[in-house]
Amino acid sequence: MRIFSALFLGLFLTACAADMPLENSGVDTTYSSPVARDTQPSPPQSADQAAAPTPYGMVIEPDATSPAGAKGTASATESAPALAAQRLLTGRWVNSADDQETVQFTPTHYKTFYEDKLLVEEDMTFYGQCPAACSGGTSTGEPCFTISGPAQTDCYGIVRLTDDLLELQLLGISTETVVYRRAD
Image (cartoon, rainbow, N blue to C red; front, side):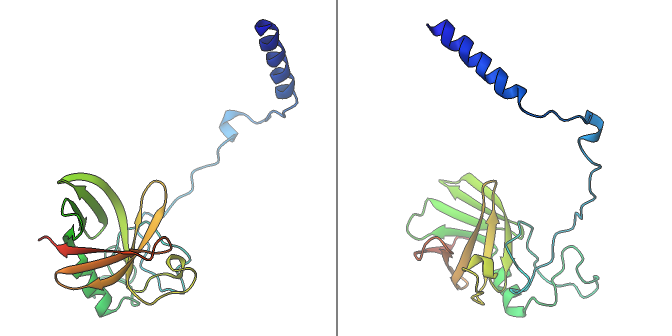
């Protein structure tokens, strides 16, 4: 009986496959020529321009000698308080509820450590004014950052940031906050 079932299933699948159209084009024409892509990171966007967070490195400070939009420079929309917040955020922070967890912010990455072992390192983008895509379609005007991993991009609102205290909220997911204290 098993042989008959396997034979019937094989014939059925063959009949189904025979009804599917085959492509007449050869392998050489299957793929078009590669499209040239800009390798420069996108400059920070204003809340009106930002349809969704982008997984590119954040910009630290403007350089008046560089052309507008050049790699490593801030756009005219970046304010002095936003740039100061970026500098203040950079460094290592310890979770106040679990001192085994630390996070580290660099100009382009977010790293999570547990018991001094690196768990996660993801691309990070800082926004002086959180894009509307992070906060349900309306910009909050508050600073935030996004981390982009293989599965998704998450937005973290900066609730409070001082020299020694950082309070974050995962926007769109939870109203709870996580408090960190500076480790370095």
